[in-house]
Length: 278
Image (cartoon, rainbow, N blue to C red):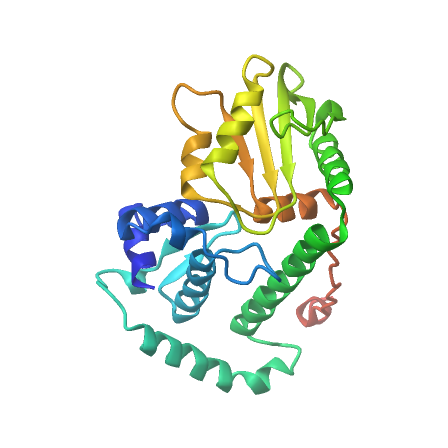
């Protein structure tokens, strides 16, 4: 919790999940072996560090010290102003006490916003875990390549081909990305159906296969990328490689409604005031 709060302060009191993660890694000087440690590889692509930061965000939000916008930006609240550090045990106790008191309210239609947050987080975790298991256990490597091909087409790519030739530096396909119908970039992509973290050597191998053949590279995995891999992908003077990890992939599939459906519940409210003035 305290490393997260320190990271937010260093970022100017707000930051994206990725920015917070990078700042915590930098400030706490977390080594690569720790960053690569998976939380539960059988159910999720999440690393242990990523899981603990998500857990800390959840509790600190319920405690009132941080908040998040619809765009996924997290920020310190006024309650956190001037607060140097927290006692995690006190935060956990306060949040759990509040949740116990709201058990009765959860059964009513007018559930509290806190209960809604808990249910929303639970739903978010369940669908992402289910998707992760399907992608890593049910889909064959070739089926996963076809899924990525479909995703790229739905995202506006044209002439998307899956090659999948062995001995080609991990290049699985190519396509043309169009920007606002005016500019286009030739892209080579690699898609890795993987449990665990992709390291820098895999990025270097992919880049080696790219050189002289394309404008940009795209590396998609169901797993995660180590910080060294992320740094290697954006290294100065080297061909650019964009990275899409398992969380980004899940959100993109959800956004494009590819195998992921978002159901909405209709809420009907009778406006008493309207009838009184009729």
